[in-house]
Length: 75
Image (cartoon, rainbow, N blue to C red; front, top):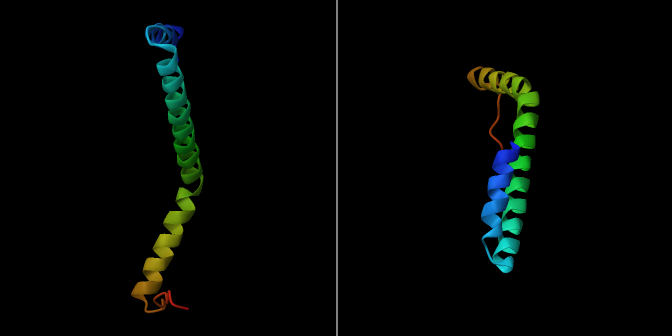
């Protein structure tokens, strides 16, 4: 993020009462944490996407060939 954007956010925060600033900081921390989780998920998915596609194709072939059995969730 650019220094200008950070400066803008800081200036906006400084106009708020201290207790509201604390709330905003907590919100931003949680929001950034969620964004980081999403980025990690996206990266992990990219690493496994090719394998997932191959497994899905294999499953479709097995279903079409009558070689697949439905899952029994009660077992």
